[in-house]
Length: 129
Image (cartoon, rainbow, N blue to C red; front, side):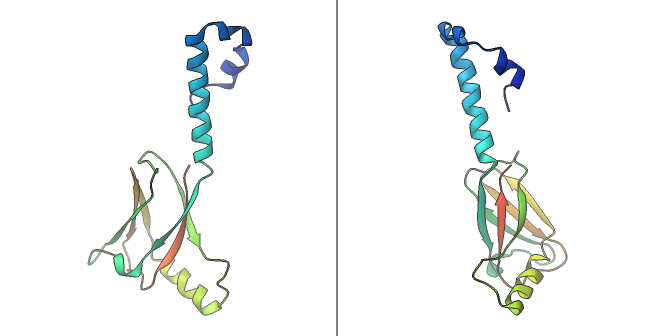
């Protein structure tokens, strides 16, 4: 957020005569709106069982266009509404439980499993904040 609420309240319509001031405030508001819109973006990604790299620490890179290394996303397990079989759900949770850490970079996230490599693919919901 680039502009304080108090600053917005002090800005008057008569200030439109000063194009440089008006344009700067307008650009800040647009930037602020883009940041707020981004916080509502949730991407569903798949952690593929065949893509884990490593022998004692397992890592997997997943591209997420638009994510920044400075973002602090909320990452959670995601199960499709079409899945209701309890054995399948249990297997998905077991694979997800292997995930120990998510590191964020510009354009991608890196999943890290320190204890065990997941033996099946699973989905993640990544909410960019």
